[in-house]
Length: 89
Image 1 (tube, rainbow, N blue to C red):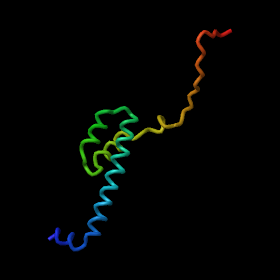
Image 2 (tube, helix red, strand yellow):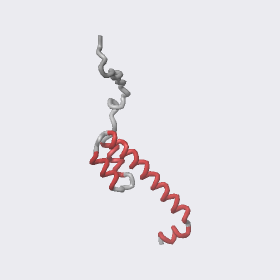
Image 3 (cartoon, rainbow, N blue to C red):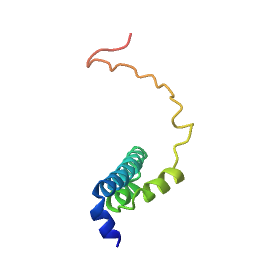
Image 4 (tube, rainbow, N blue to C red):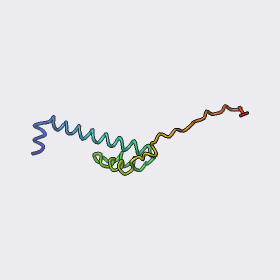
């Protein structure tokens, strides 16, 4: 019966499919991004391999939420490299 309804109104089916696809791509992309930035290879591989309609990335993002301390925007001063053979006087 449900398949018959999809056949009668394919635009609603395609719209629903598009919404699910957008939801999945959004959360999996964010999960993969943060897993890569945090150097967590296990989570990266798990999120990449298991398609859970965005649930696994959501669990990851809630569990390993980036803290405010790490993303505070601390400025690190970088000194230019010295040329070979030059000595500091």
